[in-house]
Length: 277
Image 1 (spheres, rainbow, N blue to C red):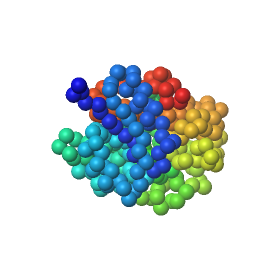
Image 2: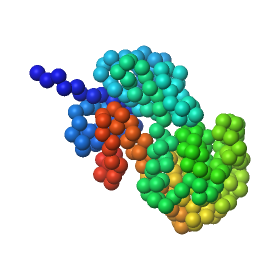
Image 3: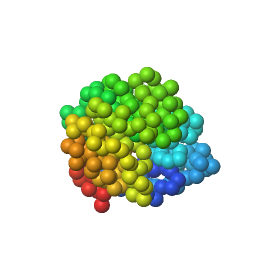
């Protein structure tokens, strides 16, 4: 008999069958020869509290959290990092040996790391940022950009009140624009970000005055299904450097994997291929 511990981790959400995180972590477990498993768990809001208290007793060392639980877990965790509290959401949980649940957010790190991997000379402070959308992902994006020194973040959302709430929380560097006046926020923007679901498979495209894009801009889409959205194709046609959203998923997973399994994984082409397969 062996007493070797097999570590378990999960991704929790509802729905969850679409998640590519299991393929990502399975690839890393196999690559580094680690005995462990990472599984998708569909958990309803009503069952979330019970699930989080049960998983550590079943041998789970942590979990990723996705829609619709990212905000709720902040109230259920015992320890919340300053970063997760600022963003107002957590995507990563660590089940500590003392039984406490530690909540963090690695989405902002994943966003920045993805841009720097594909556009090595990109810098947040290069100029104004134009950001479309004001959901949970946008909060992580704003937080990471401000931390990196972005001078101004221009934000537009179809429901203006959500964008106004972002400005109230993150301060005067966040400037709200009306959704129908996108051309104004694109003027001189050095970085352009789509954090909405528009352009995702089955959704309408994000319609913008693409001729207003500066050819020097770096353009990224948080959507990764499809990898090349119409938003990215239009930007590329105007000379912009473009970055798809898959890398954000990969990079946000790396610090989680390290905390749960003890190895910092590399995000490389083999990783992308394993997740896309």
